[in-house]
Image (cartoon, rainbow, N blue to C red; front, side):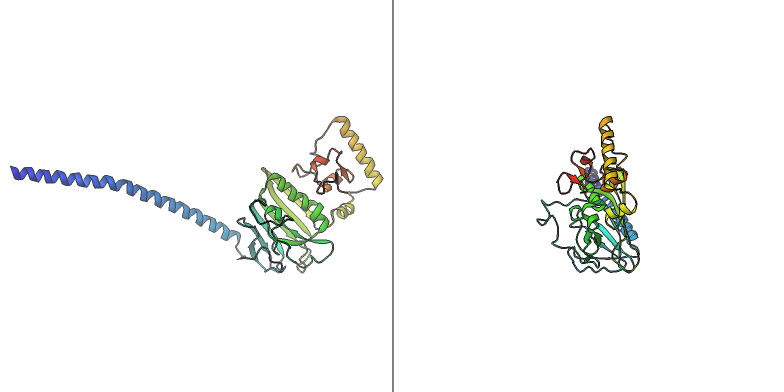
Amino acid sequence: MKQKINYLLLLLTTIFIVSCNNVEDAPLADKETDSQEVTKNYSETEKTSTQARDELFKGYKLIEVDGGDLSGHREPKVVVDIGFGDRHYYAFTNETGQLVRVIADEIILQDDRTEPVTSSGRYYADEAKVPGVERADLDEGHIIADSLGGVSNAYNITPQNSTLNRHGDQAYMEDAIRKAGGATNFEAIITYPNTETQIPSHYKYTYTLKGNKIVDEFDNGNPDEINKSLGLTESNSTNSNKSTSSNKSNASNGTKDISSVDTDGNGQVTIKEAKAAGYSMPITSDHWLYPYMDDRDNDGMVGE
């Protein structure tokens, strides 16, 4: 009898120990499963991202170029990250080394509080010497400006008309992005008159500001001369009369709607848009359009 009791106690003890081990092992198995799921999901995301990038860069060689490289030389059929710091802005060249496309999922503005910015508001003291910038009427024009987080090597610089770059559509586009706090879905398409030159003939920018898709398209030339050739400017007396008449009309009916002038709907009026609507330059601070325009030198006049 005693032997049977001892056997029963041994059997119960064994069952109890096995049950405890199973209880302790269960959470561990769950934890291992969760960890494996997280690792799997991360790997799949990373794999998808890599595949998307490989597809985007297909046919191009990804290379690294210092942001302050002044050489002006570009390799053909390459893609280069031209975003300062952790930004990712990608520039593409064609078979002849011309800069033909720049893209960025998000434009992140320059931060002079945390980034090494010079007193002139630039990351670098100078820009790449792309062939053509030696011309007196051409600037070393950024596709994505310093203020928008772009570097200064040849993969972000094209010879650009100085008036266009400083006071024209290029300047207004950059200012609109700054005022909006950045942009998304940015793409620049740069075209050339032939395969021999590094001086573009045309720019087309597409980007999203506060949920609105914007398309800015313009030739690489003096906007005043281009407008004149297109018949968008008239004699001073005619323009003056038209501007005065328009001002009186707006003053009399109280209308301050810029939709008829702001053709791209971005809330900003460019000199080109104002002229196309029949307003003469300059637009002074007492003009109803003035608050919608960019007075870069703050002298109370735009387009002087």
